[in-house]
Image (cartoon, rainbow, N blue to C red; front, side, top):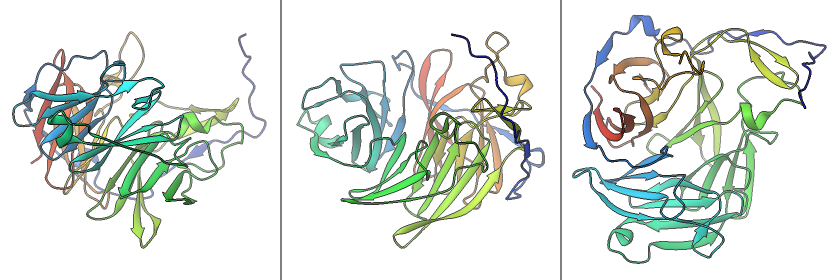
Length: 338
């Protein structure tokens, strides 16, 4: 049944200015960098998450029910292992989500069953049983999560009253405001406040980029708690609340993918909105450009790799990122950041 639009009596019309003033993109010269192809044989309908762990890339194939985890050697570009079954069995997952535990292990959590496994990559490659299973309460409802210390998790909970939750054994505490204030109770928070979440273990900073707002928000770990550090509002955003939804007054460029390196917070986003809209769908095209921010949220560099970026991965050990791109088929490339 088609719903008639009903405007909320008290209409919020908000104009946000930048909380943090970093370098403007127009002041930064764009550098062209040619990516190095690692493998041009990524066979999938659409790739899920991409992780960098040691000498391997792990990518998720969400449409493959028999082996949704793929492991690729970054030096040879060859797939060296695969695993992960969708189902109800003891070594199967109904709604799997993959994350990075440390340099030689990855985690898989079934988001609807509070079931979690840790996979040893070396054992997986040697064709040994890689799974260590345990159940972890409290992760249900999280749309993103990170195991930032052994058996300590931080999750993104857009449906709850506070945005994040830290889970340590049987204890949990919530923190974090939503990226905007003054929204009505009827708003679909699970939809509008989802985003990318990353953690730099070296400098103990948590980074959140909401999908629907062009913001980067950082938190600094202070003892056992996280405190908000900085907010970068890349664009001023005008919007209103209409029938429980956020309606933007103007089109904005949104952040696509997020990855962390030694010196940079790397985000993939288009340079200009009008030139990066699909004329057939009206949707934002996949970006060709990487914006590099330091950990104080100052824009440092803009990199153009000339191909659409689908997924990104990096870690705090170097300033190299890996990406799944379309060129024109899906392939994995290496990008050495200048």
